[in-house]
Amino acid sequence: MQNPLDWGYLTAPLFKTPTWGPFSIAFVALFGVGLIGTIILYNGWIRPIRRNNLLDTIVRRYSAILMPIFAIGLFFFAFRLMRVSAFNLYMRAWIYVCFLAAVAVIAYFVYFVMREYPRRVEARKAQLTKQRYLAPSPAASSISRNQRHSRRRKRARAGYKSAHR
Image (cartoon, rainbow, N blue to C red):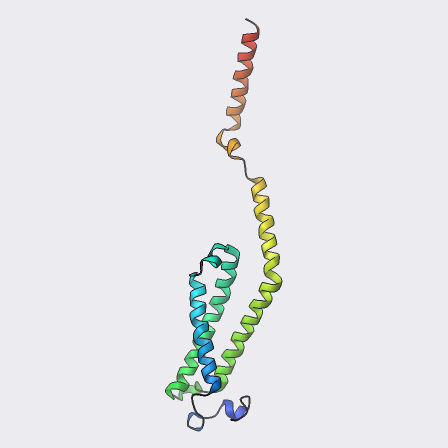
């Protein structure tokens, strides 16, 4: 086997290299599972993630970024598999570029979840706490202010009348 990072190996014509090898099997397995996984995550078919609105938003955003990367990578591999040499889309270099793009997005997602997500969770908790304290109580919202004052006046008049009889 040649050096997988050699430029001659990355751009070799189809008739000089085999289609299936350890890297291509791993690539198809990872990108196939990745594409199916991102479709599942993007559509919200996992309930624990769907219940957490902030996590669901973040997972959907990164799934939307990864889904076309996985699809394009499998598209490039399909050219290799069908042995079609149109526009040089069969070259291993394109598959490696897709793999590097997927690794970069996944690495940034892990960084985001480790660093930024806890800050956003705390900010969300603070916002919910603030909204809870600013929300009017159910007893106060059912009776208007004028109705409360008119009841007080009626009670005061009734007490005044009963005391002076």
